Length: 147
Image 1 (cartoon, rainbow, N blue to C red):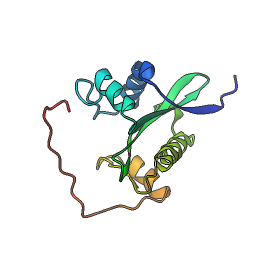
Image 2: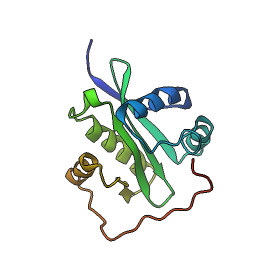
Image 3: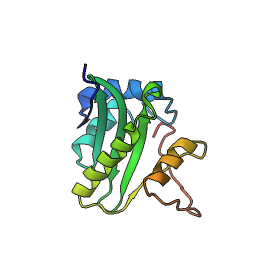
């Protein structure tokens, strides 16, 4: 086996694989009955503003990231690497690929929201040159608790 990681855009046919990865990675903000449901993702991926990127080792999905944009700003969402594969540079590679996808769409401002307790992600993004936009408040309005 080569153990060489490969990165590719995922399709809706990969949905069960990335959902299983998110669960195994401990990503607790996933909304499978709302915005992270199969039908929602199918619609999002067809819209051209969402790209799910996967990193595979020997055919096994070990990391994913969702790159999205609104035409003005890009977002890096749902970055996750399986615990056994962390500290291998895979998250850095996934972020770089997400940035590349977004820049190819003409996006020059890229952001990520990181939950307060997720120090590892905060450290990763800081090392990659992201600045902490302290003082900003994230507000939201949801039509349902699953959105």
